[in-house]
Image (cartoon, rainbow, N blue to C red; front, top):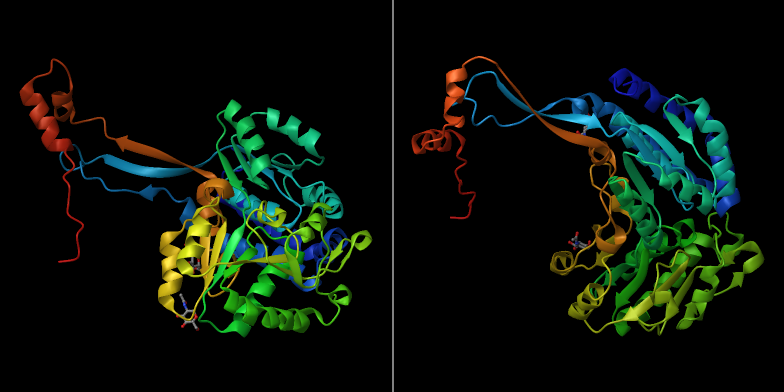
Length: 451
Ligand SMILES: *[C@@H]1O[C@H](CO)[C@@H](O)[C@H](O)[C@H]1NC(C)=O
Ligand SMILES: CC(=O)N[C@H]1CO[C@H](CO)[C@@H](O)[C@@H]1O
């Protein structure tokens, strides 16, 4: 019961804010060491976005925690002391497993929701982002109540052992294959899960659009954090004519962002694993393509003549590599998207609103953004989460609070007026059923507003 009072939750959330303030420089240093992340990108994605979540949560927590009143249609027929409500109960002990690509953000944002909803939590940061893992393990516990929050470090072996335990909720961010392992472990204890998985996010560029702006928005989304973002536009779908216009515009955007040699840019990151180097064998390099394995550097790269069967079109890319797939029109782009697993995000660029709306209506994905990339996840007012292969469940803002709360349906009644209950008791009769039916019936009401 220790984590239930609002004052306790607020104190822990405020301590998370102090952690971000006090350790800002160490966070910048650790993510720079792990991922070569530019200070600007760290400050935006790891600090500012977490603080926004904190402020959104702290500003609304008292309202979110309140019992939710619901309709009491039957009240009049039964007795006046008939009070239905939804109590927002914590689940209990939550396990949060985070990945390496945004090593602060991706454990902290779910943790904000878990604390806000009154849970205890075990946090498992990624062992791949080593410096950040060490920082979190050493510094975070001194900010939080050690009775209720713990950081566990380690790799596959430790995570496997952790998952043998019975948790009340598991929140996992990572790849679809590991998501299956987590969900299987959770099934053993019937533990509910949220899975934030990845996916190959298509980006459709129609023939009518402002090519310069599209190129800048796509390049920013693809090359931010050196392409290691679960919501990055993973590949482009456009006609051959559009590709010919986009290539110089993308080249210019890359040059404007990172200079003639992106390797020397302080704003361009490094990648975490070797696997991505092999993806450069797909198609033909139209822009970039330079690598330095010792430095884990891959230049911002655009691949053309890519076939759907190429290696780069199989799993999520997670590197600064943008393949272009040629289609002949919008219908073909939509068919291509729908023939694959449902992604975490779909992007569509067009000067024609109808085109953007068609892509939105005829496809399915975790989220959607028209005429831009990635910006939809910066809003705590929007749910963030996948569908199908890209995950299940949502978080951010109020959606985090709801994810980590059990909606407990409750009814409180008075103990008097017993004669009103008589019709429901045996011995049964048709007359009694008639009374019950009249009292309990829910009539269908037309919701048709188009007349
Ligand atoms: C996309 O941008 C174009 C150009 O600004 C605009 O005309 C169009 O309405 C936008 N579409 C959406 C869905 O916002
Ligand atoms: C989801 C929600 O209720 N958000 C509110 C949180 O508080 C701010 C400030 O009062 C509001 O603007 C949000 O709408």
